[in-house]
Image (tube, rainbow, N blue to C red):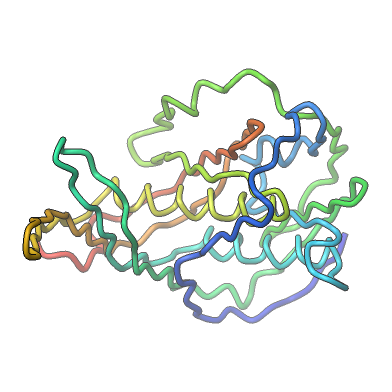
Length: 254
């Protein structure tokens, strides 16, 4: 158990870009083991994941700790602002074309104690972070079930105040840690968009075509976001994230 103090500071995380190197992993789900706290993390504020060899000379536990700290920052109060562009196909389907999103930390936890617990499994390392002293865990390691959890296709509604959304990302062969972080990022954005967003329709013309699109704008504060469950298939990773949104704390005009 590593315990340290860190000053709270505002920062901005821009849209995460996941580069897939060498294609999508074809490894079977049953071939990899993960600690129980990574499968279901409802009692952990944040978790990180690192692999040896991802970057030359990088330490897997160091990478996992850095990721866990980023995820922990999102568990405070953050403001999500920006917009996403979706092209409308002739059949009416929306196709994502890009976004400019910022996540800004607006809480100050300088008086809180940062607690980091790391666990190595072969060439991989897992880090768990919280702003309190975490209880000792046995961390029995197991693979993800081959059966898709119900929340992947039908998210649970925890309560009228606590909202949950699912984030999905392709499993990158050389960067599984990045895949989990992208899925977490998408769950947070989906939660924000589901609470309050503003949609504007736009059109543009070329010599022989007309293109229609929608711009989705978001500006809202989310509190207490955390991942409560994860699941992995051979080609995708899924994250169930929950948090509270203050509909009064929004910069969008009615």
